[in-house]
Image (cartoon, rainbow, N blue to C red; front, side, top):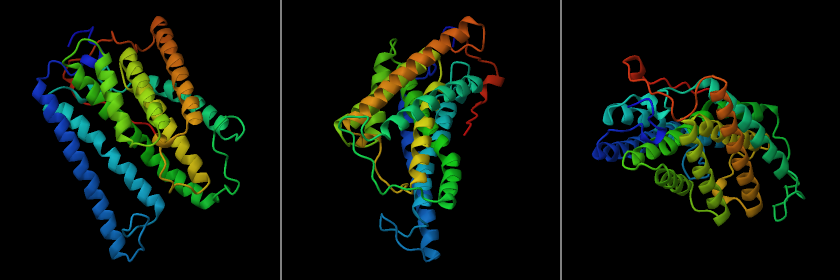
Length: 317
């Protein structure tokens, strides 16, 4: 790979069959791990004599059920890295960025920007009269108590960042780069992974699907432009974590609704935030490059030395 290799071409020159085989490996292995974990926990709950949960199986409670759901998704992260290393025969770190690793300093900057954007949306949407057509806030919503809240907070901080990162590595990472091996332009890979990303969240409202589609397209473009997954991971982590923490504060972690179920007002607000986030992140990326800081542009050289062959992924909760 040359110093001018773009992010969506980092899987080159992998043969087409390696990408297909790797995709099959990710789907099958990740699914088996997720189901296996569910069966182990369910069996343990049955042995412990626990009552049935909402799904009709013995359960340790809604918090553990939610954690297991997130961990089932998180299992796809190491599987995806292994697919890149073993099947496509390339450094697993090239899924992270054109630098062959996760650029932690850039990730932290993006996390700050994302946190501001997501918190702003949370504040706006918490005002029942601020958005026409928005559902009113339930009057009975109240604080769940410090014990349940802090317990939920610890669990969420432990599992949500890895779950969100796993989704990014599979879609904006593996799929975008895999399809990119066959095409010069990044747009087909960007659109394809965005559709898959939206579909994986289920079919809720048209507005919710549109929000997920915009999320996927915009973050796919930002990933290509900045040469890595850091900006996408940052927004995804903040979005999922802050939303889950708010739910934990009100004891609503059992709610099954996702972004796919958004109404038009919430979706419109979220889309504005996503677009604004992209503008700010791309502006910061240009400033950092002009200032001679750690490069984040797609023209950054990809290390091909033996040291770079080792994955350098360091997820920060």
